[in-house]
Length: 403
Image (tube, rainbow, N blue to C red; front, side):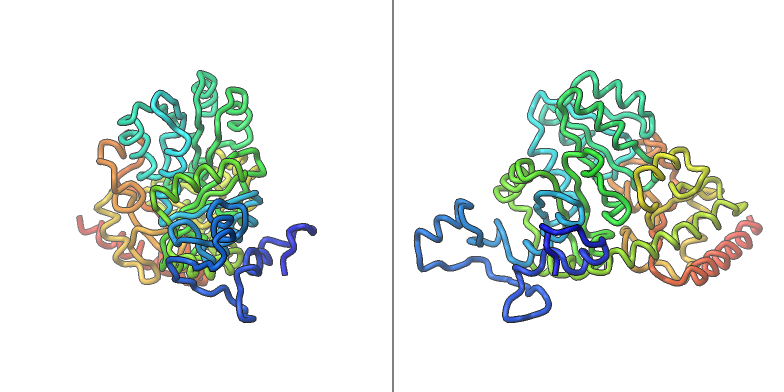
């Protein structure tokens, strides 16, 4: 049983035990799925105290739920946070957080390589409400520092990025942001708490698409934001009024998935490293993007701030989309799908996965080739994944020789 007042347990232990004890009932060993919309009170004063937050409890499902609370508590502990609140999707977590802290006339500084949906918020939605957005080439820390020093309310980073796996030096950017009093928000979806805990590096808020590595089984949507109680309460208030609440059943599936987070992520990272090494040597591959490779531009930064390099990588094929269209269908142990972080290995071009929302011209401007393939390594045996890649590339070479 986890006691938060004692020495921290290992992350694998906390992934299994943390945040659940208060939500278990009837001596059950698992947190129940509570589907009740409302919670009844005979004592009107107690009901009021719960409603205004003076006493713990629940009054209405859009606000809080016991199953959801257990999930939030678990992620809060894994991310070393004081508080956490959850959402119906990862994009709900991102958008609600940004809209909580940005007002007309404010400025936000971010990087160009954020997830496609996030990029749309920066390039389309925030400008519509008169928020000034500056996007800097990812990895150009000097330019990022320069823009932050001009003054802004929010600095938003995603590291590693999806799908180009670029790295931002968290501590370096946090230091500059604090000089101008800016709030620093970090998307930790790709790394997961197993590989990186941005709050310990000075970030104010860390968020996840829980649909990905946290859940790990491609069967539940969700998002979560962690940070100080003061900041999270503001986000929670925005979310409870705007209504993007996490559903109890999804919370249960995510809660169950997190229990194996460490085991899954370690195996996924091992597989990703082996796949990256294989691709890096293949004559039909133009480039491989994985922070675990020593040839990665910011390998040293990733090594400094990460405990592992994660299960996501990407690569560019010679021949572009024509080659992609031949290679991917030939794979036996891979889903060609728009998801990442699952136990099954998943392949997909950026144009139909991470950046389907943006135009080909926008993808080109962001430095994303049309033939870029994102790979989310699963938990299969490494030798099977490598053998599968080998036969698929042999098929590609044979087909290309016919051209």
